[in-house]
Length: 135
Ligand code: ZN
Image (tube, rainbow, N blue to C red; front, side, top):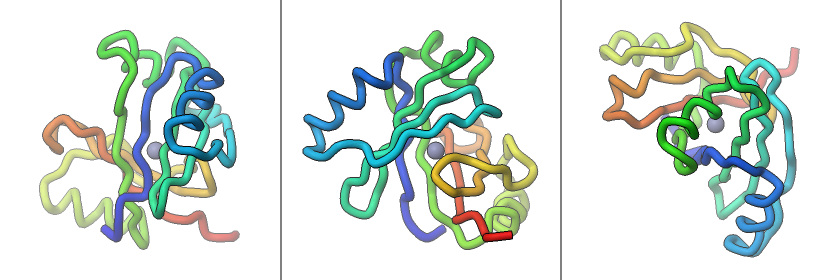
């Protein structure tokens, strides 16, 4: 793993939260993006070398909707940058970690991503991500 790439925060109202985080961080989000496969709309802020990703559910089947129902708003996941998602997944599986995704899938902000199951990471939902390679 290389560094913390971003911290994901589940929110109920992304427009309202964009305003709040703009005041908090002193700069506005630099992009918004819908990830249809995950049923979420995201917005990204830069703070130093790290990003904050706000996530709002767009459907009741979304993991973000379920997270907010169960636990309310708040920190949802930590994402670590890696060189290669698939080889890192193999390494982590060999180390005994349980994964949610068995291989890299497309995520927001030009990344390929995969999640580890929180039951093998002290309940911290953990994402690994890498820049999408141009095809
Ligand atoms: Zn993320």
